[in-house]
Each structure stands twice: as C-alpha cells, then as structure tokens.
Length: 94
Image (cartoon, rainbow, N blue to C red):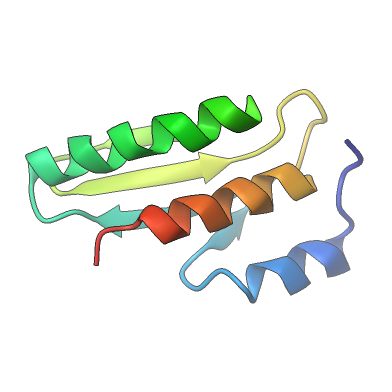
C-alpha cells in the first residue's frame, strides 16, 4: 500500500475530528470515564483491527486511551491508517 503525500494526509485528517499528526503517525486520546471504560474501549478495537490485519499502538491509563496509527511496514501513513481511524472513531465512547 503506497504512502500518502502530505496533501492527502491533511485532507483525510479534516474528516477525523480530534486526530492529529505526530510524525509518521496519526493519534488521538479518547476519554473513557474510568479504567473499566478504557479496557472496554480497547476490547472493542480488536475486531476491526484484526479484520484489517492492521493494529494500532495503544496507551491505556485510568480513564484515557491514546491510539496511534501508522503502517510500520511502509514507514508512514497509508489509507489503511485512516480507514481504521474512522472505524475506531465510530466505536469511541460518547
């Protein structure tokens, strides 16, 4: 899968509120209310990540989960990162 150029990355980020570029990744921190909420949110990410064979880097704290996406095999951002980010966004706690 080809790497996205800067213009494509910026355009795709506009469709993902709260997601930000961090070098070769995109990331967002989700507030989950408490530790149980954080773990449940992470558990919900397993199915879409496995279905795509594309796995986020996760940082779990008491009430927050930071999700980072990058296509490591390509060395940067591809369409897969933004597709998975959109699926994760749909699962986000409200």
